[in-house]
Length: 235
Image (cartoon, rainbow, N blue to C red):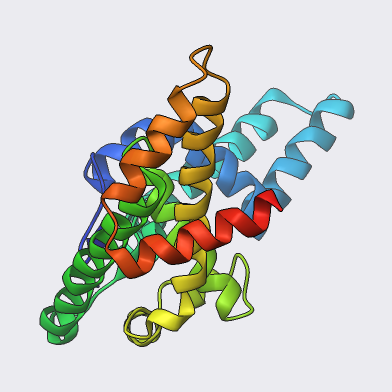
């Protein structure tokens, strides 16, 4: 997911969030912690209680505290509302990992063109990988292979910044030498598993018959190369 710089991700409007998270009681507690005049009045009231001061004097101090809180309430409500707004900005959503990136309108066309091209390129390579490894390999596993091969060839295992560099990825994908060895390994592993299943079959003819079918599908020159290789393996 992506968001434009001025987008908001809130479910509730900031004013509604303040009514839930920053009720008057919470704001008053905040005032008592932060406002020097209220701190002074609150301290004075506690001292008066310890000294058993007169009720009228304590009532005067309480009224001063209430009046000061009433005076500050609009300011603290405004600050709380702004605080709630900042939690829903696109920059904050990106920092929390809720979205992938903040995209300005001016660059959105080129950005999403590269993103779409990147997805199409990844899917094309994933198809090659699944053909090499066999259809039992999932799309997700094929994409994991792509990420692993790309980052390892760049010497940056786990580097998300490298992985998100679309232009660098296109250059890597356009050079088959970056991953052709890995594709060959997957093909060899697939054939090895297939031969192992034939070898473990109770039917003693399964392996020879399977090899015969494979050899008959090859062109003559390639078939001769494979047969020579088998002869060398068998001694």
